[in-house]
Image (cartoon, rainbow, N blue to C red; front, side):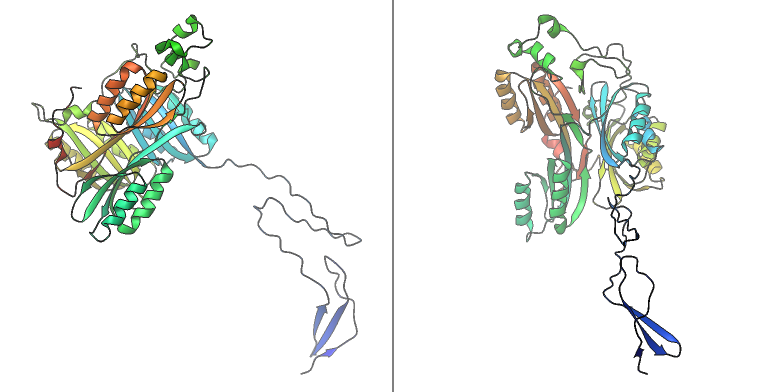
Length: 482
């Protein structure tokens, strides 16, 4: 049926403009109107955009574009690195993990470094600044917590350690070794069908290594938590300038002898003088601070069994990434009277799972019962006691030393012997990065003590079973007395 066009008739006024309109008679009472030269007004999109188009029709058909009303500012969720410096107390790990669990935080990584009767927790969590501020206040209320700081915004040296076991057939082994050289990694174990690689660096490097090696097939992966030390400033305003100037008088510029002799006044509630800001392990001992030697920095002394059959056992666990899982695991251990000598928490080779590596002293029978209790946990997938198996173990340490021009050369010579790397330097300090087992850490720390130790940050032990079956404990020789 042909449609007939009628003369122009007035149509509804458009929101933007008025244009001539034709109406077509389609028959049987159906009419269709056509606007000539008319364009549809633009759709107003997302409410999240910074500006909105507000179109208003006035008597002269003008179009006005105005800015929207200011929206309420929302706190953004960011990744925060929290440094918790504590004294030795039974169940302190469980208490700190409980503060985050009760508020629904998932701890992305956790590193516990031990030094004599004190420990440093480096915790990485994601949250808003307001809520994290409340968490810091709650941590400061815990007994034996000396200092809590959020060091995310400050210039820092951050490092992480990863052990990764790959499928390595003879056809692709050359390419893997080529990638190892590019990322400055080390091969710590080799077998017929696998390679175990050790790599250190910042989190971005860890992601790049894992992405490039994933095509070969990752069998196992163990990562420590992230540790960090502040980058030292230059000049007399730096936190450790007074300490360095007291050790090396030639560094003095305008400071009087009285200012050099001032000692930082530490208190148990975390207050410290300006000269000690950023101090992880203060040089001055806490003589008035009680300690029960629960967190033993020299847990490696129990490699061999004593007369009672007690030795350090290395446990590896795969758990779900859910709030409170670390609190549950450490609670099972602490409620049965076990001391956690080392703890490292980080992502695993499987998405949605984390790997916990911990060292617990005990007899074979008592640890077997503990493993049976851990297997009853809902969020725990697997747990192994690899103490009596050949395994590769590593630990990471950042250490800041007070130096002058002469001492800096000596410290670098010592670092070269231990294969340590300089990661930060100022006119009065130098920061070294070292990986290895406990005895290597203790040996370097003892050699550098005469120069003056400013800060020390250490991770816990991470370990993977050796595919080659070589027991490296027989290669250690005679360990240093601890």
